[in-house]
Length: 487
Ligand SMILES: *[C@@H]1O[C@H](CO)[C@@H](O)[C@H](O)[C@H]1NC(C)=O
Ligand SMILES: *[C@@H]1O[C@H](CO)[C@@H](O)[C@H](O)[C@H]1NC(C)=O
Ligand SMILES: *[C@@H]1O[C@H](CO)[C@@H](O)[C@H](O)[C@H]1NC(C)=O
Ligand SMILES: *[C@@H]1O[C@H](CO)[C@@H](O)[C@H](O)[C@H]1NC(C)=O
Image (cartoon, rainbow, N blue to C red; front, side, top):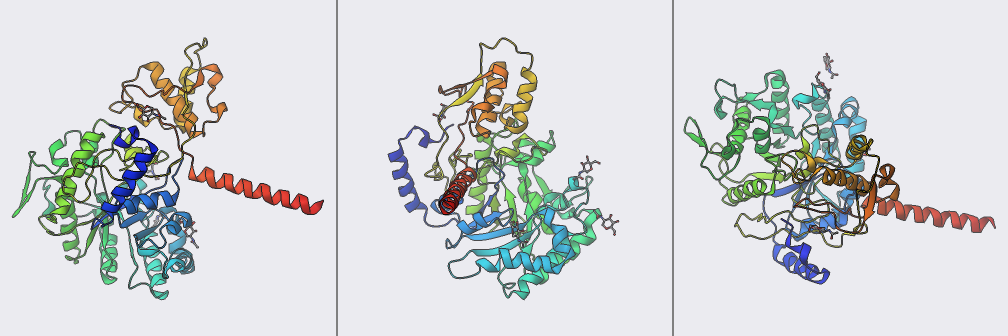
């Protein structure tokens, strides 16, 4: 379903955005978002920040400390979790000096009036994920200690805390006793986890965990669908006095029990990522995503918490915007987690306040698009022998995840699918005419190529391109200047 803004004129969009901004200026408590930036055409950080504010979102989690992004958050009061990516953990663990420099360049520099409201530094991202084969087991804890020490020495350690966002695969219950109270940290990393949680506890830092009911459903085809959502009607789990009606609560309490067993029963838990994707799998669609979020926000508004931890839960939704460059190793849905599409349009009605109002979030304003043109299969082409290879090539750098079975464009016929792939490649290449040739198999059209509920996107003017264009202009000006001086 296209957001209603699609049919409106520029003027009415602007008016609605202002009106909605006025309404939403009160912030939604306890709900933050993950702002990932693995996209080919990112929006301007200032555009994204405006969108956050218009929706009353006052907490944001980043995956690095990119100065352009972080700088856009200055003066907004928005609470920020910065991050040190996994590939930097070895550097941070091997030398305290590196951690000190990181803190100086990425934290203390912004720590002033009108600066950035940094609250947490995430050291690594899910570093103990089973699929990483232990690559970060030796470096994560030493890196954590070095960064916390650097924050302490810089005099901000009482306000800015380190933590390690972990995937829910660091703990589990045994197969023969699958209840939360039987939960504990994974046996291969248990000793390390106990050391880490005690360290976090000693520094008043929270445990950050990513919980994905969608993945429970995706990874286990026998998983009862209703148990992934919050409206009951499915199976339940009885565990001592506790009664579980959804996998989110059961998962969260498995962690709570694991923390108890590690000797830190009251350690605060923050859900670092939670959400539902809208494309790229049979269970990834707008209907399920809306069902998940509606139930989730209702639960959040009631502050009911979980059986073991009643009360408010702090969460960061995953994610803010679709990311067309994310690795699809976990699945084709990876590029479709956004609350917003690549160009900042809300995908479906969503009420963060949990009051169940049937309204859309406020979309991005002032986004500039490339020209309204598409690259499609040329039906007049004679020699089709290279077609399969060309399509594979187009999909290897363009994003074809909407074509897989169960996805929004899987219903296209063969030539529709070829057109889709060619267009995604063409848009990815900023509509370079050379990217719409494929030996005569492709042609450019100004007729909207979208069909049967499958959107053929027109890319936006990339913020990255914009700055490099500005940079090129500046460089050209500088060269002109040099020439003048030489003459
Ligand atoms: C600060 O963070 C940026 C972005 O994540 C990173 O590239 C840079 O190396 C960091 N600075 C230091 C001194 O480590
Ligand atoms: C982990 O091991 C598996 C199986 O040996 C391998 O396929 C995969 O590439 C490895 N992953 C990493 C991150 O090293
Ligand atoms: C971690 O340290 C252990 C013990 O020193 C060593 O055997 C292992 O190879 C190291 N792992 C990595 C990924 O460096
Ligand atoms: C093309 O058509 C689709 C489906 O009707 C629509 O959502 C989209 O906004 C159109 N694109 C442009 C650039 O007009």
